Length: 257
Image 1 (cartoon, rainbow, N blue to C red):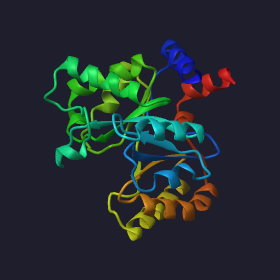
Image 2: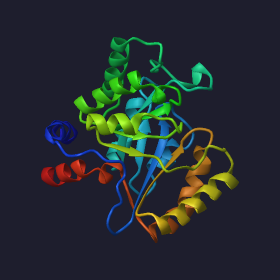
Image 3: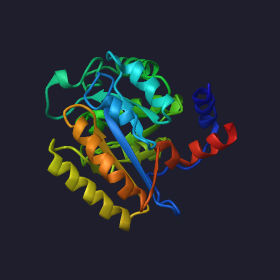
Image 4: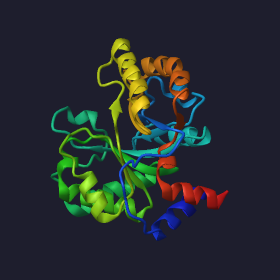
């Protein structure tokens, strides 16, 4: 009920949209974990970590609803992890009802609306893959319009340097944020630790950082690295959910307590 009230009230707020403007002290770190919804390795361990995470759940998969409910009950933010067309990669990596650039406007709308309905407790959306779709203004205008109508913010995972999300979201007044770092685009302990160390250095220079990891192939490694580095990150920043970085959500949470 709180999510529904928040969505309704957010639709009534007309504040300028921005992307990850610097926060005042303390520094904020939001850790997003993608690819929930398919009983992936690391799922239970990550959801039970003693920090607030943002959990991106793919729709229409065997554990979509279970993972979203468990994430919500454990105090994490939930996102719709919308499968979207990449420039490279296999179609079977996308999952059911993916958003591709050859779909009609009506079919894109139908699929995005259905995805939102399939992921309980979602407060925002990001994309799974999506390097081609997020460069397409027609596609992203529809996706962002539906986010706005449903009171969702959008996280641009930045899987391409030519994303149109920031341009369109600013124009359409849709709250949005942008990813700063991927932990695990290489699936090794050495690389993920290297990225955690890079994140730690970035926290010295930035007031706000958003970092993305995954369950799945790298899930068990992500669990181990996060357990090691959570205390390191907490020495420099407060670990928060993405909704804590959106002023509209802070206001609404305060009003609904």
